[in-house]
Image 1 (cartoon, helix red, strand yellow):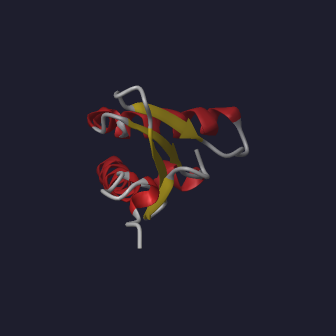
Image 2 (image 1 turned 120 degrees about the horizontal axis):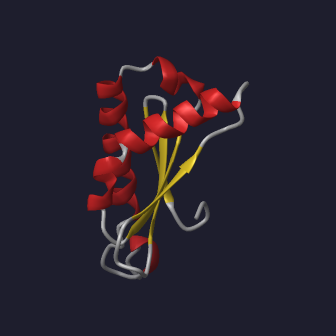
Image 3 (image 1 turned 135 degrees about the vertical axis):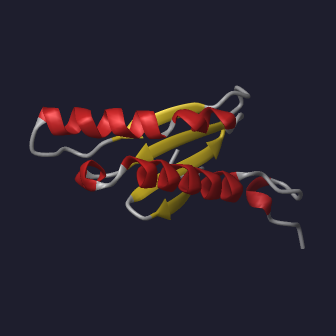
Length: 106
């Protein structure tokens, strides 16, 4: 995913996006190891709830990641950052005319 996808960062949120052959959106969460399992699970739950609208990006694999700062961010701002980062990552990963990576042949 990392080698084929494109990264976008907005605030504390990072989203990797890559085209998938399935035609539906697949969403993954990457949560770093934090001091307790309770905090890690709260981060996961908040990211999952903020990323509900990401299924609209059909044909892309999206991996959303963030650290412990997610717990201190207001939910409306978190949702806005997740959606904006996903929009940017999908736009960067979207295949453009001219072949792989969107580069035109010389």
